[in-house]
Image 1: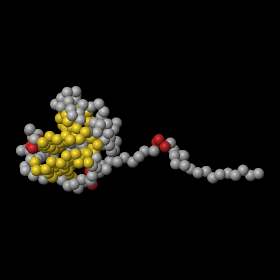
Image 2: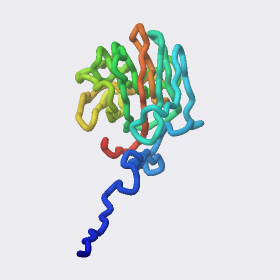
Image 3: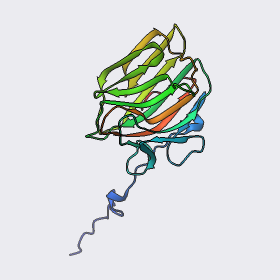
Image 4: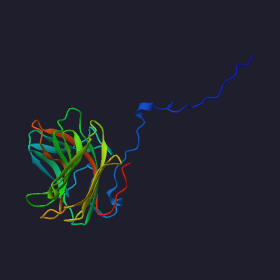
Length: 230
């Protein structure tokens, strides 16, 4: 009697270990941004961005990233310290900013400024995306507006969007997290005396006595609306 030989069926992963199959790396394409003012994927050092480190360090780290293989890791050891990447931005009537942030578990979130759009000269006033007592919100220095209405997610990447209309009387600030509106303030003074000409990302200010750590990735600033958080 002839034995029946069943045809071989190649199943997925039969010829390679499944664990070795890598997902495509999602990297922001700065060249596709309309009205671009500033952009950084943190995949490599960008000479347009410089470091300011006062009681801390701001380095590119390949241990965790929201897209690509690297992100900016900002670490500050003392209250009042700073660890950022910064660059100048052109003056505009509207600014649209989008970036990803991750606060590691256990970090003191008593007071952290993650992004600053403001004056290029002292006293460096402007509009910040901040965390205060664990809650996410905004600080608008020229209007003395400080609002932190929503808990900041911890130990995961969060997509943050800031829309800033610059005006002494008709200014507007909108902050969104993962597509959800966190705060929307209208009819306020958003124009600091020195104008807006500078952006900082990382830890622009730390109020926690024991310092803080934050990861930042895929920062883009434009004068035209940006695609929503993916």
